[in-house]
Image 1: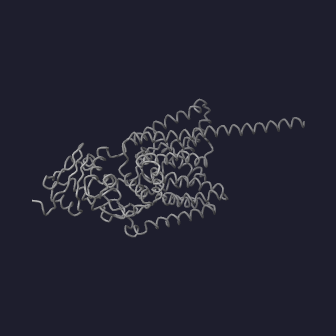
Image 2: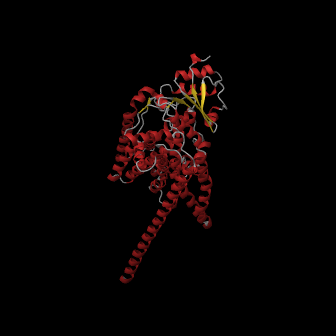
Image 3: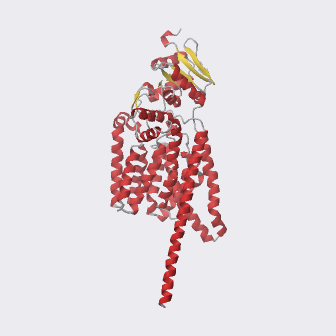
Length: 523
C-alpha cells in the first residue's frame, strides 16, 4: 500500500515536471514566433520606407528641430524662418532622443529607421499587455501581429513624435495593469510613473490615457464597484501631472488661443482634414475589417454581458477615444491609431471565444484550421491594406527637393518664399529660407488669413490682388510645383508677366519666380 502510494506520488511529480517542461517549450516557441513577428514588421516597414523616396511633408519640420538640437543642444523655440519668424513651443523628448542617435547616423537615414523601430516595438508590447488579460498564447500572438500591421499606423516615411508616443502609451498602460494585478508591486509603480513622465514630455497625446481614466472611474461608479486605493492614487497623480506638465510648456499659448488650442489653431478651411466627423467606413478601412468588427463586438459583450473587470480599462480607453473623436476633440488619425491598437488587444478575447465555440461543435478539422484561416483573412484585410496605405503617402519628389535646394543656394539669406503650405517645411529645411506659411499653425495669430491669401495667390487671375498679398508679406520668391498645381487645381498662374515675375528656375515642370516689382511700381 505504501509502495503504491509512493508510486502515485512519484508519477504525479514526474507529470508535474513534464507539464512545466511543456509550458516552457510553449513559451520558447511563443518567444521565437514573437521575435519573428517583430522582425517581419520591422523589415517590411524599413523595406517600404527605403524603397520610397523622401519623407512625408510634415516630417521636415521635425527634422529641423532634431538638426538644431544636435547642433546647439537647445530646442528651436524661436524659429526665425517659419512664417518669416515666429515662436514655436513643443514637447522636446522625441527630438532629444533623435538628436542623440543623430550623433551616429545621418539624419535623413535615421528619420527612416527610428520611427519604424519605435512602431515595431508595439508588437512585443501588445503581446505582453495582452497576456495580462488573456491566457491563450496563440491569441496574444495574433493580437501582437495585428498591432504591427494596422493600416493607420503604416506611415513608413513619417518622422513624427507619434511614432514614439504610441509605444510609450501602451507601456504605461501595461504597468498600470500590472499594479492592478499586484498592488504591492513597487517596481511597477516606479516604472509606471517614469513612463508617464516620458510620455508627457513627448506628446500631448497622453490626454488619451487621462480621458480613459475618466471613463474607467465612471464605469466602476455605474457598476457600484470600487477602484483599489493604489489605482485611485495613481489616476489622481496622473491627471495632475499631465496638466502640470502641459502648462509648463503651453500656458501662454492656452491663454492666448483659448479653446482654439485644442484644434491647434488649424484654419477652418482645412480643419476637416485633421478633425473629420467619425466615420465607420474610414474606421473599417484604416483599422482593417476583422479587428475592428471583432473588437467592437467584444467591447459590447464584455461591457453588457460578462462585465469582466480585467478588460475594463481597455474598454474605457476605447469608448473615450471614440466619444471624443466623434466630438472632434481628438485628431482623427491619432484617435484611430490608438483605438486600433486597443481593438487589436481585445481581438485576443474574440479569438478565444471562437475557439471555445468550435470546441463545442467538435469539428476537429475546423479547430486545427482556425489559426491558418485567420492568418489568410488577416493578411488579406490587414497586411495588404497596410502596404497599400504606405505606398500612398504624400511625399515630395526628388525634383521638387532639388528645386528647394536650389532656392537655398541661389537666393539671399533674408529671402522669403511662398509655396503650398505643405511645402513650407521644404523651404525652411532644404532652402534654409523664410517661408510664408507651413503646416505648423499653432501659435500663429494670422494663420487663417495667411491660408486664405495663399489660396488667392495661386488661384487669382488679377495681378493687382497677387501683388497686394506679395507686398503685404514681403514675399521675394514664388514656387510653383506639380504638387501646387494639384493642390490648387490650376495649370498656371494667370497673372504672371515678365516685368514683375522673373522666371529664375524652370526644371522638370517646377517653376520659381523672383518678384521684381511692387504694386505701386506696376505699369
